[in-house]
Structures are given as structure tokens and as C-alpha cells.
Image (cartoon, rainbow, N blue to C red; front, side, top):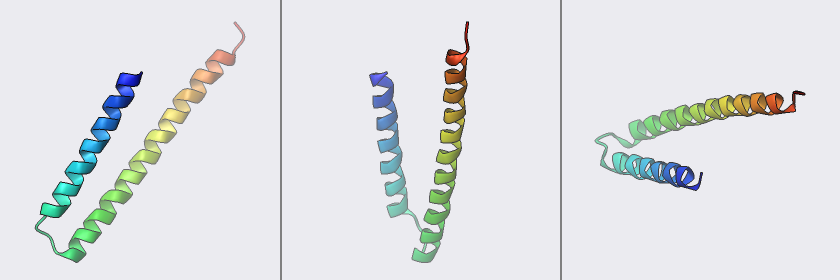
Length: 70
């Protein structure tokens, strides 16, 4: 479990570093860049919420299965 968490943390850090590098090297104007960043952040937040909802549903299903009398 610890290795998985370490991998996920490393992947997230790599994604953040890559995103920052891409933003700094992007050939866009300031206004376009801000709009693109805002759009991408909104997409990432929505994706994160969707993933959290899916995981929550999975965990609730597992909990319900464990609570059922056998």
C-alpha cells in the first residue's frame, strides 16, 4: 500500500512540474494563458470530484457487503 501511495504522489508531483514547465514555455499571451489555465483547472477539479464520487460509491458498496449478515 505504501508503494502505491508513493507512486501516486510521485506521479502527481511529476504532473505538476510538467504543467508548470508547459505554462512557462507556452507561446500564448497572458490573457489566453490565464483562460487556458482556468479551463484546465476547472476540468481537473471536475475530474477529481468525479473520481472521488466513484471511489466513494465503491467503498460504500464494499461496506454494505461487509455489513450484510452471512
